[in-house]
Image (cartoon, rainbow, N blue to C red; front, side, top):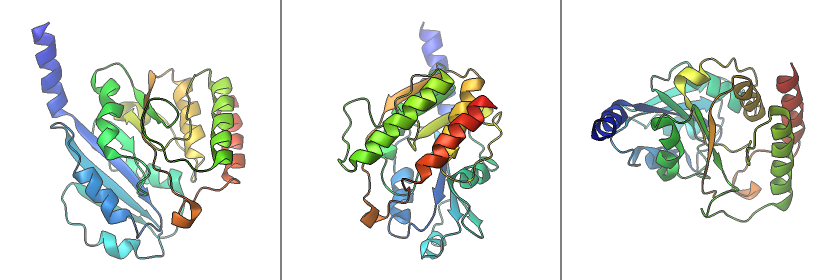
Length: 243
């Protein structure tokens, strides 16, 4: 048993975590978001942070020019293409064994990422979703209709995929790189979430969920997703599950 434990520790120290951070017009939060990730204790894991400036037209690009940490790779889209497109671009540059998607809006806590990726490190999972709806983590109270919409979309997704996820649209998603590389992603916008879920389900991946905190923003604070995005989510669920 001692030999197995020591082997796992040795493997853990050799693992690199690649964090993909799509960014669009986040001049108020981008530097702090990067600082939070780089300042997180990942227990001796190697780290790379890939920031994709997705056509921002505010001061985000200028601020990113100030980032000099060698662990950070900055990429840029000439025009805004959407979250899914930014994730695809980030995936072309990842070198870590584990890939995690994280937004630049400070709604999620990088300090919880070790708990999210632990099932992967332990060899139990290929994919781990965070969930804002399980566990005892703090959650900011915001929009009832967003909550109801998320629950309804998750229910429909679960019915189509035969999974029992509680939060299909959560930002924090972690993947074995060898697993996510097998998925051909097509969606440019927020349809990334239902698309990747449908395609992972078809691969019969080992998928886990871990409760995460959620410090949601109001629209006045810069929240971008709109109720109309729900229709695209619904379309993507049927499109990618039934094709």
